[in-house]
Image (cartoon, rainbow, N blue to C red; front, side):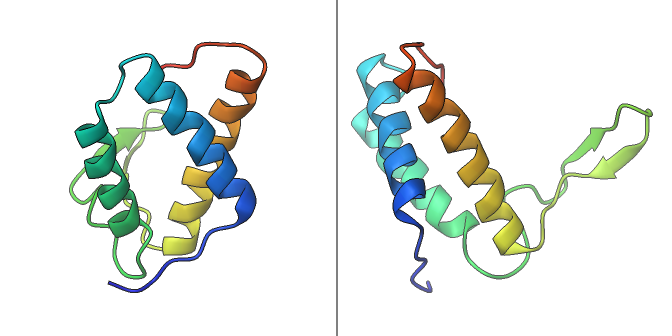
Length: 97
């Protein structure tokens, strides 16, 4: 598995989110270790294996594949998610994982 480097902001946001998830019991330590491994795998270059075979329906009612084959886009999606959650946590909200 290739080494994936993330920004300090990504790391800080993830750590805020993960600490919150552990604090509120949304994840156990074992769950979090498994989630981190899944995240490392999802951030690897190559085809999207996590969402393979999944679809979603757009607002227009069109069914499209859920796969994100560009790994940089997958990293951006995770970065946006953790940034949004961390911002809410820092403002005092309990954020569900």
